[in-house]
Amino acid sequence: MRALLVVAALALAAVASAAGQPVVVLDPGHDLRANPDTEPIGPGSSIRKIKDGGGTRGVVSGLSEVELNLAVALRLRTLLERAGVRVVMTRTGTAGTSMGNVARARIANEAGAALFLRIHADGAADGRVRGTHTLYPALRRGWTDDVYAPSRRAALVLQRDVVRTLGFPDRGLQERSDFTGFNWSDVPVALAELGFMTNPTEDRLLATPAYQQRAALGLCRGTLRFLGREAGACGR
Ligand SMILES: [Zn+2]
Image (cartoon, rainbow, N blue to C red; front, top):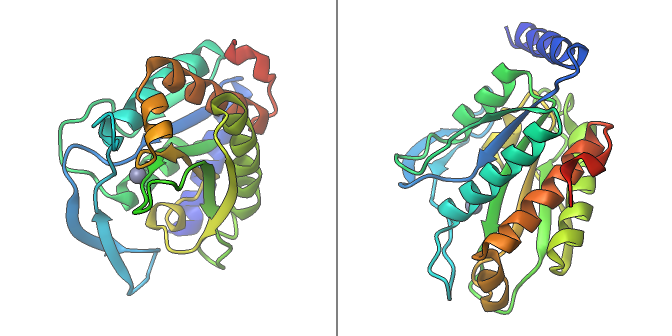
């Protein structure tokens, strides 16, 4: 069944790229309400994790991560569509209970996404902690072996481009074996943590439309580079 799904996803991706229009699934993290239900961290796993513990919030701006993630994703959608990429969103509003990470991954799998791009901002107890980092799935046989290498490659270019456009400290890449949304993904996946909303400097900047556009621009350039396209199509 799973093999069939993978074949179907690959076939869809092939059709999309043959038409010259790759599909990218954008996943603005969280939603209006957290989701305390649990779900298996990977297909067939007995380990379960909460669907969504909720996001962080700007220590100075008061902006919620939920709104920031969506604002950046909507700007990114515009840039990618202008560059000829078909975009599917896991949410386009902030209205309900978070769907959980298996559901998010399923949307990407069913779309046959060339990239499943998850957009978040971070929080830490120490307000001095700052910087941009990008996460991707750790290698695990049967779960991520099919997407590990391209996901890592996507994370690398995304991190480089977002660091360039935002100018925040470069915290590098991080492999994660415990992310449900990674383990259920049958397509290349990366999660950008744009900055720390618990750091006053980064919060103030990320709360502005100008920096939200910078974040979108960096993510657009990284995405196009990953797709083997000209990053200049994202504009300036
Ligand atoms: Zn988050």
